Amino acid sequence: MALEQTIIEEWERVRAPSAPELAEVKLKLKETALLVLDIQNNNCNEDRRLRCLKRLHHVQLILEKARNSEMLIIYSLTSAASKNDIRREIFPKKDEVIIKSGVDKFYNTELENILKNNKIKTVIIVGTSANGAVLHTTTGAAARGLETIVPVDAISSTYPYEEQYAVWHLMNAPGTRRRVTLTKASMINFV
Image 1 (cartoon, helix red, strand yellow):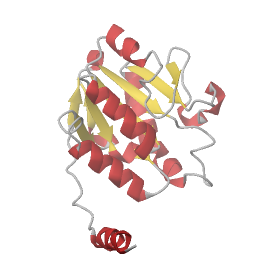
Image 2 (cartoon, one colour; image 1 turned 180 degrees about the horizontal axis):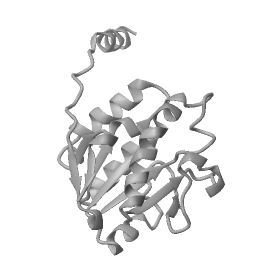
Image 3 (spheres, one colour; image 1 turned 30 degrees about the vertical axis):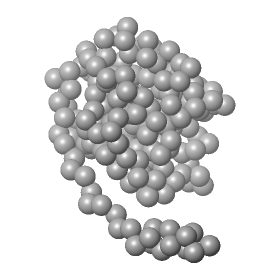
Image 4 (tube, one colour; image 1 turned 45 degrees about the vertical axis):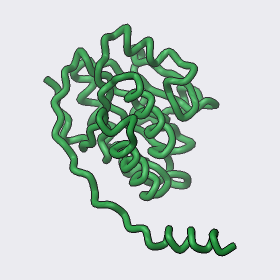
């Protein structure tokens, strides 16, 4: 019991690190894809994840830029969801791909092959469940050698701490820290 109490006391003294710097990014259209992760009616709503609703306009901004640039856009769904579960504000167009998986959208999907076949070198990752789908898919992308752009105002979770942790992890973990760039929706430019 004493060890458990010591651990809890140590945790209570932990202070959050400083916010990371955000970078302006310029992306090559032909080499970049947008991944829109798990933004569904059942998890992006006032009752379950209000933070997702409040950030939806940032996702829309990036999605609009991507569509206007004719960028490859790939949506993901949770394992039990269907296309009709995607929020109407960001609903996919007919030519936009949809995959289904758990938290790592590379696992048991065609995502890696789709990206390779389109000669994609960089992915922009937006979506909800920052500590789930965003964290694990970004890690999967980095492990495959992809540069990854994460606009922090276009990811969400239930609580701010979950978002903060996911971003901290991406910027500090050995597998991701050299391949992830943090930015905001308004700081993404296409060339």
